[in-house]
Length: 323
Image 1: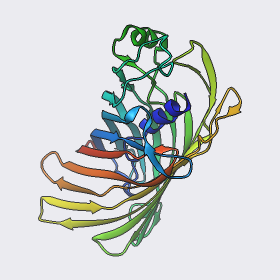
Image 2: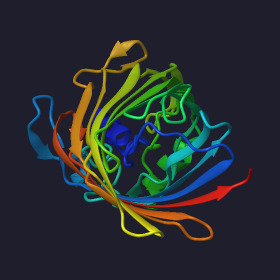
Image 3: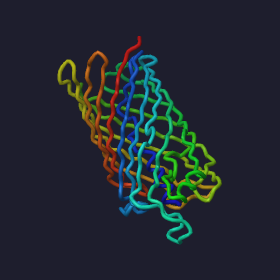
Image 4: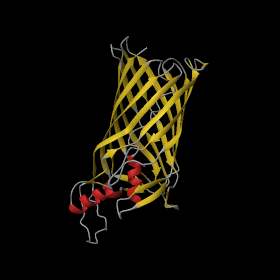
């Protein structure tokens, strides 16, 4: 079941991280996100970085998420980020066959990876910048601390019954189901008022967790270690007129995780890495209720033990000022 576990862990990251830049929200301003992501892949990278057919032929998945970010002060932003949020639709290309064609159980072509994902709660602090604790007009530096709260609670006993009966069933949770804690670092270098480059790192450490498994019924102890993300993104902003500002970005993102353990034993070839590029464009409209629309498309470039997934994302961000 190692391939299944790796595939599900890849589904956890169908959305890009909230890197964006080293800015924080002004005091009293609330930013609300609604996010849609369509993720698909038919190939995966093996341990040598070579492409091969993905397990179960690959997956298509539709996910909706959201976030709330509020400027507590001009230097501190509180954040509740639920992205990936809820996978409302997913489908495997090939039927799932638990016994590999031995005949004891029928194959089932109604497997899915639907369900709820984790919540990130944190605070972002502007250290350096025009509104930072240390004023600077050419650079911005921000740091964030946060926790990952697992929300998934799959019922695999029911899922196995549905699988055996030929009904639709959830094959695995799209979540590690483990509490996490970690940090984010953001650095912007401003070349001029229109162009800057952002450097970003997120590192999350996970607690060990006892998890139910799909088959055979029971629990196992999982130790995931950490997830790390590194990103560099040039961004160009253009003020079209008094009401509209356009932004284009070209982030290059590298994600990695070490080999994980099950019941104290390291799973061979379970360390992952993935390099992706995800061009995006957004439009900010300064109306009575300011709103921003952002569209992005992520493409895999190289990786190991991960899926060569492409992701289309669309975001709506609404701004409101309270004080």
